[in-house]
Length: 303
Image (cartoon, rainbow, N blue to C red):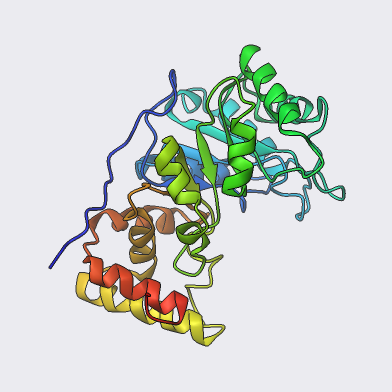
């Protein structure tokens, strides 16, 4: 047996910010007008030991409150709970504005960040991320905008989301300070970062890895939409049954077992589900079991 270690320890990534937890909270479903309920969800994440809160200016655009809704709601929560801001690592993203959809040329990214600061009602964002690459923006433009924001004290660190390794390298070549993080989609159903070089690049450059949709957008829960998902769920359940854990906890643990130390962003807005995610730290699996999940995802044996 070769048990894998799930490292649940926190790590200091940003000077002047709290230590970053091994799980983060993704706020793409965080919307509405009930500040008390939104506060309860936020506190449930914090009480579960989650310090990394990840949102974006676009979150909420497809709901009744529209573009900026998640940031605006969280800004109201922060105002109503003055001590909360200093206890979390606040991350947000910008650079998408439907229907363009991507615009990071000139001063646009600076304007996006300044609007996020107003909605969040804060003076500084700990981690500001470019949400998706603007293919028409030269990396020098993006780097200059991030540098301006950092020099003005509006952000402490910068990262990118949904970038390819080549795009990370191109932007990094023009950055006056190192990128802190990358944020790809990664789960037992979406395994591209294992093979497209992104996790290798993170290990090479010391980049933090935040991962979105760690449960496959909910595809790993409930009814199985296809044979591949059913295979992956069965492989996870084989571990879950032996561990007395939920399938979701095993899926989080599977992701965190990689040496790049991915930080899955828990997307649930239910306090009980948020707390349940930390059961991932108790899961023990062998390397053989980890690879069994990967083989199920690939649909073929490892070469």
